[in-house]
Length: 260
Image (cartoon, rainbow, N blue to C red):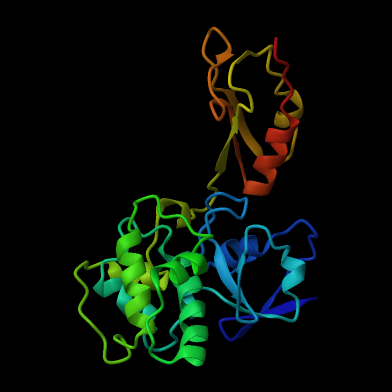
């Protein structure tokens, strides 16, 4: 069996060739600080360090982590907070906090490389922007994020711990904050939605037979209106509930329909 080292501990990797690193990190190891958002390597929320280099875990096959050292947000800072984590807290560089772990991982790697090469010289906004260009904050906390990274790199948060303005800030910068997608119950089903790829179309009959026949699928339902018209890209067409995300996605792929 292949293994990786994550946050200093040895962990097994699945034999499934389709398994992604994020599946192992979140589902197998319950390190839910790493967030699955876009699933396309665009938003940066799932960023981890692979042998010290930032990588999006939603695109990385789990098998590619064999023999490598992985660091998730839970491993940043160790026993004490990293300067970047303290700076994010002090500058309130977060709101909902869902994207924050990815920013922390990337910013910590940038900080460590910067300090090794430049000491306590402050990076420019353009240099920080280039380093964090693969990350999106839907709350728009960019000003605080940029100031936090600049001050951390300048050494202003090398000292003792701080008292953040938000009570939950520490949990958000360390990956301990739990959201609804991080909670698992016995027998819980996972839902996914089939969305339109067309801006405007009338759909024919939806055929759910093959999707419902897949083992582990609990339900498949239509989300179309009575006129069967989709009016924008991304409009919901159908929903699936299954025992896990992999099974649910397989059921989505099995749904058959045509456009008129």
